[in-house]
Structures are given as structure tokens and as C-alpha cells.
Length: 142
View 1 (cartoon, helix red, strand yellow):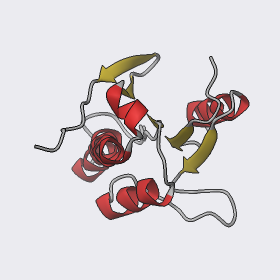
View 2 (cartoon, helix red, strand yellow):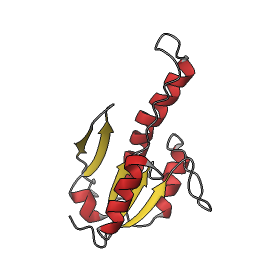
View 3 (cartoon, one colour):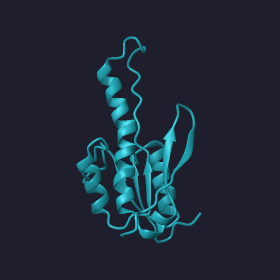
């Protein structure tokens, strides 16, 4: 795989799979921005559940070829019966709404080459990661 000259945003890139993906993209020649709620020193935090923050992240990066939605939470605090609804709401907001907002903002901003191909999002299960293609096409002006 070669990503020379490509630009990528990796959400959840401060640790785990997101960090591994960010390192791989960089090693393959991509310019990478890592977005995380708890970023490295000196970097602003990004809340993937906030549409304005996600849009600002995507706009501020200039050209965009790749978005890797790696942010996910699964707080195991209690049994299902004891899990508060507020915890469940946060899981859905981060894991689902965050991907939706990221894909929405990226689709509007992707470079022409990326928009003509496809936007790839990742869907995470408890033990596996499967790539899922979210095909997009930019509308041509009438």
C-alpha cells in the first residue's frame, strides 16, 4: 500500500487501533491529522459528537483523501440491567453519530480523486473490524 501525497484524518488516533492506523498511514507517506477527545499536549481536543468541531477539523486540514473513523467507546460499568440510560446514550452518540458526522463532513470536503472513488468507514464489533464501503458521488453542477 502506498499513500504518498494523500491526506488523512484519523479519529480516535491517540491510542489503540486508531494510533496503529495513523502510524501506518504516515509510514506509507500520508499526511495525517489525529483527532481525539484527549489529544497529545498542545493539540486541541475534538469531540466527534459535535458537528461544529468535526466540520472545523475537516475544513482546517485542507485537502482530504481519507477519513478513518476510529473513535469508539464501550464503557463496561455495570450489567445491562444496571447500565444507566445516559451511558447508553453516550455510547450511541460517540459510536454512531460520530461516524455519521465525520462521513458527512468528509464527503463534502474530499478531494476530487477521493470523491470519485469511495469513502471508506470502519465499523467495529467487539472482537473484529470489518471495512464497510460507503460509496459516495459528488453531485455535478446542473
